[in-house]
Length: 148
Image (cartoon, rainbow, N blue to C red; front, side, top):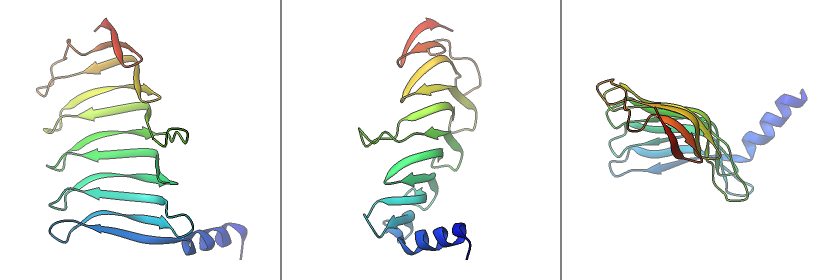
């Protein structure tokens, strides 16, 4: 057995599938948990009470990592971007480019996060597609410092 296949087999043996039931017996969350330390690992999916997809992404040692996608309860994509774990605070702030949409599917916002705070140029729009000049602009440490 090659080293990669052996490592994959050992990892699979060290995890167990987890399903958290919702109110109507539809799973609210699905993923894997480490048998060694009990931390959530790998790909996880969360659903609204009616079973509609709410959020999907990967966990590593119980913290969000990599690309995450969120959906509105109507099934439209709500947000997408990356999370980077911060082990010191046990959190996973947004990092890098993120895009957001209104429930009607129209573009809502896009920009860059650094350590969970908006940084640089951010563009926002209203749900009818028009530019939102009250929010668009240059951001530093999550505060708008220059109007769009």
